[in-house]
Image (cartoon, rainbow, N blue to C red):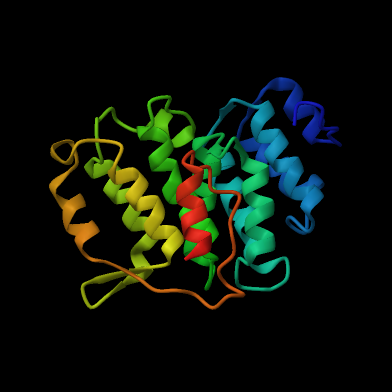
Length: 236
C-alpha cells in the first residue's frame, strides 16, 4: 500500500512516520467522524499503519476498535464474518499467506471474538500462522513475535486455544476437516518430543465434523505447501 493517496489529516500523519495520541484524536474528529464506513476507509487505516512504524497504545486501540466495528457490524451480513469479509481481510493483511504485522494479527483475532460466526477458512488461516512459524523458512508476524521453540510451545497453545475456544464440546475439540488438516500439518513439523505435552492432549481430543456443502469450500487462502493434502481434503 506504499502508493496509497491519503487525504487530510492522514497525509500529515503518514509524512511523520509515527502516530501519537493527538493524531488519533484528529483522525476521529476530521477523517472519520462517523467511524469507518467503507472498504476505502478501512484501507486508509491499513495504509496508515504501514506508513507509521512508530505508534502508541492509542493507535492500537483505535485501529482494532474501528476496523472490528466496520467488519462485524458496519457491513453486511451484520454481526458475522462471512466468506466475503474473510477473503477481503485475508487478502488485505497478508503476503503469501503470512500476516504482515502483530497489530493486524490482533485485529483478526479480536474480530473473530466479537463476531457471532466466522467461516472455517478464517479460523484455519489463523491457525496456519503457527505452521508458518514452524516451517524451515519461517515467516510472518506470528513468527516474529513468537518465542523460539522447536515444536508447539505454551505460547502456540494459547494462540490456538484463542482461535478454537468455541469448538470445545464436552471434552471434544469439534473441528472441520480443514481446521483439523492445519493441526496435522503443524504436528508433523517437529518431533513429538519437541511439542508441549498439552499438544498431544489437544490432538487426541480432535473430532472432525463435515460442514454442509455450501459452508465447506476449497479455501485458497490457506497456504499449505503439500498440494496433495489439499486435494485429499477436497475429494473427501
